[in-house]
Image (cartoon, rainbow, N blue to C red; front, side):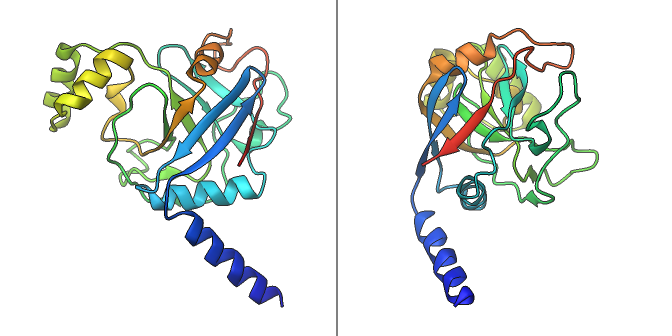
Amino acid sequence: MVRIFLLILTVMTIISCKSDTTYTLETDSGKIAIRIFKSSPKHQENFSKLVSEGYYDGLLFHRVIKGFMIQGGDPDSKNASPGQPLGAGGPGYTIPAEIAIPHFKGMISAARQGDAINPQKESSGSQFFIVHGSTVSDQELNVMEKTKGFKYTTAQREKYKKLGGSPMLDGDYTVFGEVVNGLDIVDKIASVDTDHQDRPLKDVKMKIYK
């Protein structure tokens, strides 16, 4: 009976991941509506699994850098004491890279370890960040293209110039979702006071659900 239930649950998870999935990311500063992309199926399936388990509930946005990003998803951040170093925790596995989408403001991207120990750019099993970023000029995008060896489309350039983002991350991290409502909440979180480790002085907790 248990095996049948697990099989049904697995089939339902696969079916639910054939299209973009939407969730509510509730924080102390307000609610953010997010969409997780079917175009990054491994990340989508993993995120769906963790949300269904309540994995993110009570975790913190433990690293906040205004004009860059807000990061959370470290299980060690749950009930973490003030000043406790955070950012190394996870579920014990990584996810193969699915790198394709630029880091416009509001994009959700997977955190990861550096190239020296992670040359395949595999993603953390649970940690993610929401891009805050800043406005971007054509000159900056030209530098990114020359440095990283790829070309932005006209539409991507216009989006970066209008909305902003963090193009220095492009080609190195997997974007697997986006904020569809609540960028003002991202702005609020990005503006909180932080300590020397970029951890908010006042905890910013999250809860994610469908």
